[in-house]
Amino acid sequence: MAVINFRYNPIGNELSEKQLDALNQKISKRVMDSKEALLVTTILHNQVVLRMCLINPRTTIDDIKETLNLCATFAE
Image (cartoon, rainbow, N blue to C red):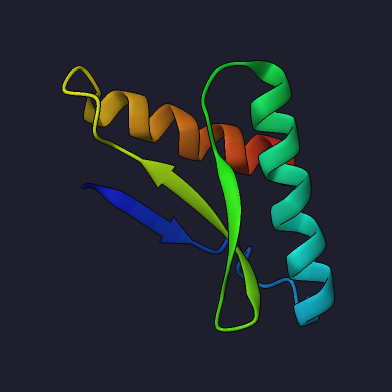
C-alpha cells in the first residue's frame, strides 16, 4: 500500500508545533472541500500530518505535484 505521510512546514516561517498542527488541518480541509484530491490527516509522533494514498494505478506524478501545489496554495 502506497501511503505517504508528510507535514507541511513552510521554510522560513518559524511556526510553533500547535500552529503547524492547525495549518495542516486547514490544508486538509481546504483540499477536501475543493474535491481536487483526498488528503486526510493523521497523528504521527504527536504531530498532525497529511496522508496521501497512492494506490490508484491511474495516479501520475503530475497528480501528486498538483496536490502538493494545492497544499502550498491553501497554506497561504
